[in-house]
Each structure stands twice: as structure tokens, then as C-alpha cells.
Length: 326
Image: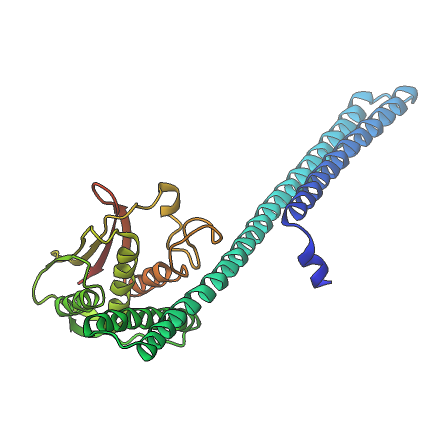
């Protein structure tokens, strides 16, 4: 049965849903019209019985049956509106739930496709680098280039595994956040130095104020910064610089990561923090990623009672701004 349902096209299910909803509303309208017609027939019959009777108090009896008719009409109208409102609310709720489930299923399928690609690529690249070093006698400069590339792919694979595991642990409550005071400035400098070492051709400009102390989990905050830097490196041309700023405000700490890439379309900005969401089609996009980095970053920042915002950079690119309360 499940295989049969899975084989039904989504568009056909959508058509069936709207057909059943319209049929239900039409049946409700027909029920209301039928009841009102029966009410009128009953009123006319009772009125004709009064006219042919010899009862002298005709006005009193007419008033009684008129009140009964109005009372029935109000009852039918009230019941009809109640059923109509309940039906619409239920239909909207079910449609929203089903749409979210379908969208989540599509995102999970995209995620599995992306993860498969993301796992195979660094493994294949690292294997190729090691085989090259084994088979060929290369000069020291070339060896360092190959080793650097292999290390970068390994780091990317490690970051991917960390994101997947941490996302699962945070959602299930299996990860306990341990907050303590640490030197935010030193953490940012260390993260930037690591990326500079991994990507020596990249220029990363920094403006980091000294001795900014923050109460939180350094590992998680650094993971957020690494995710943002990884995205900035991914989308910014190699000839363009990146910028990282850390500024202390009276009541908060602001961390900004700026890139000069193509930017993010306005229609996509509200969805980039959703789980598994990636810009464009999984079949046509060429950028690396799984759609977990920004979702995980947003969740970590919220757990630290902060917020992460996206704005446009000038002349092009994006600015991710993290605001954490002191």
C-alpha cells in the first residue's frame, strides 16, 4: 500500500485534495439550501392550516410559527457557518502540514544527494593526492601543494561530519552546552589564522578588538565562525578579499563576516537558515554544501540568546552579522 501511495504523483494528490475540499463545501452548501427550503415548506403548510381553521387567534398563531421559522433559519445558518469555519480551518491546517512534510521530504532527499557528493569528493581527492605522492617523485613545492589540498579536503570532510553529528545531538537533546568565559578575540584570530593557512591564496582582512571576553561554549561559537568563513571562501572569487570584524558594543558583541561573492537573492534570504535548504536546484547547482551549516549556526546562536542576520554587502556579496549579548 505504501509503495502504491509513493508512486502517485504529487500533482495528482494535490488535485484530489482540492476536489474533495470543494466537494465537501458544495455538499455543505446543498445541505443548508435543502434545510432552508424545508423550513419554508413547513412554514407555508402551517400557515395554510391556520387559514382554513376556525381559530379566532390567527395573529398569535402566525407569530408562533413565524418565530419557529426564524429560529430554525438562525439555527441552520449558525450550524452551517460553524461547519464551514471548522472545515476551512481543518483544510488549511492539513494543507500546511502536508506541504511542510513534502517540502521537508524533498529537502531531505536533496540533503542525501548532497551528502553523498560531499563525502565522495574529499575522499576521492585525498585518495588521488596520496596515490600521486606514492607513484611520482615530485619536488618539495609540488608535494606541499598536494598535501595542502589533501588536508583541506580532510578538514572539509571533518567539518561535514561534525555538522551532521552536532545537528542530530542538538535536536535530540543529546548535546549538553557547557558555557564558560573565553577570549572571543583570541578565538577569532585563531580561526582566521587557520583558514589563512588552509587557503594561502586568500586574503582575509580582520578588524578584531582585543580582549573581548564572552560567556558561552567556545567550540560551538568557533563552529559557527568556521561555517561562515567556509561559505565566504566558497562563494567569493579567489582574487577578492574577505573581511572579519569583531566589535564590542555597550550591551553586545558583534561578529561580522563579509564576502564579495554573487550575494543571495532577496527571495531566498528568509529561507537560508532552514534545515537542509540550499539555494537553487540540487540537480543544477555547482557549489558544495549540505544545507546544514547556516541552520546549525542559527540554532547555536539562538541557544546563546543571540541572533544572526544577513544583509547585502557593497558593491556585491553578503554580510553575516552575529549579535551576542554580554
